[in-house]
Length: 493
Ligand code: GLU
Image (cartoon, rainbow, N blue to C red; front, side, top):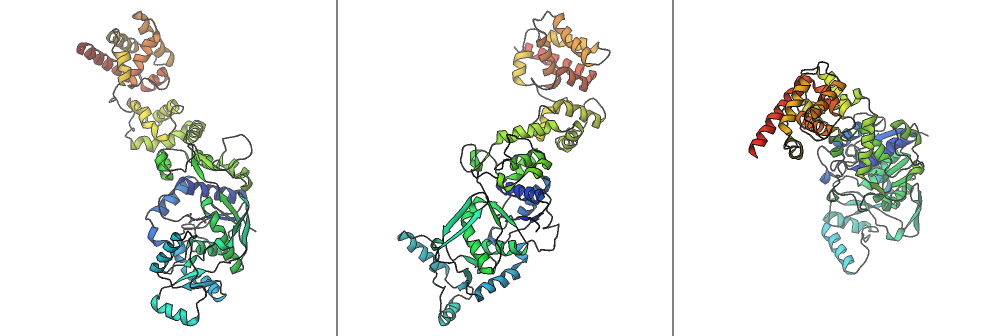
């Protein structure tokens, strides 16, 4: 039997971290088993449908390299993969339940249900449908149909005993049947509810393992009784642990962490880092290890490794992984990724007229250790592409306001100008010599001033390396400009 897993999002908003984590587990297990990964769109709630949601979902999956074998765009012989295009099927199977007495039309109006709910609340009774329409006589049914020609269809849950099942994560679970509601399977608008549509589809699509959020655990008895009533074999159940923030609270925007997956894509995380992070959020290989390549995840991923305690979304851990992944890239790979980001920020033309690609490779090499998010690159490397940068005010106070500042800039400019061979060592010698020429107590004073003059910043890659890339003309020009700036500053004081 082929292992088949489906990711079944409802297009009701932009995907959040939890959605994509579920998809990651579906994908990894399907690939681990050499099985199928299916994308099914659960678009039966017309009131909550949101334009663009599915596109975001698919963009996110593709970005993570999780291409589905069947689903929208991919096709497959178990389609259609949009539930809104499968209504006939749901009606066919609802009829089967009606015929066998396991489902019934419910004519109760909104008003009646509302009254019932209030009464239950007042009497401290558990909420739920009171089964008024479950045993209507033929005449009662006809009369009710006149009053409400658009009935819903409800499933007749068993009233005695317990519904028990094994969940891969939770172990053996059981629920008392008397607490279960006769839930709706077909709504008044003719659309199925999630409970019904998902079991019909899981069966028809040959889904072997249902991996979904823990919030669905309490719905499992409904699904199991549906399977039993239909005479179908239920899948293996896998209810994933909740995702909490580092504060132990439910992940929410309010705690300062975005829950929207697209935000992470846009801010320059690497897909492989994200895959590694999400795969290890609620799953463990059993070893104390944090880095897993895609191939290793596919090889090692088992359902038994899913933890049964809440998973923690730890942004610091994500950033840590991201940094490691950025550093594992070759300079060429990283440059390829940075190119569009730099271009979008206007960092296109090398400030010294060099060949843009060669220059980008050199710049990339210098900043590879200094960025976490790819989107940080333009800000980190702006001075390679423009002369028009401001000096860090803290640096100005420290290095450009010193008594020796004007003289030092002059010495630096002259000594750099005199370098014949623009090499790392000769640049270094020229900078250090400037400090010696002025009898400064430390070479570092010249090094800091030169950095501020050539980059506007107080930190960054190795000074002589970056000056080497900028080239002599640019460096001399910038040091002279800084000298004028220091002179103005001195005048103003
Ligand atoms: N459409 C449901 C959701 O987005 C799917 C739950 C499931 O995987 O069965 O939560």
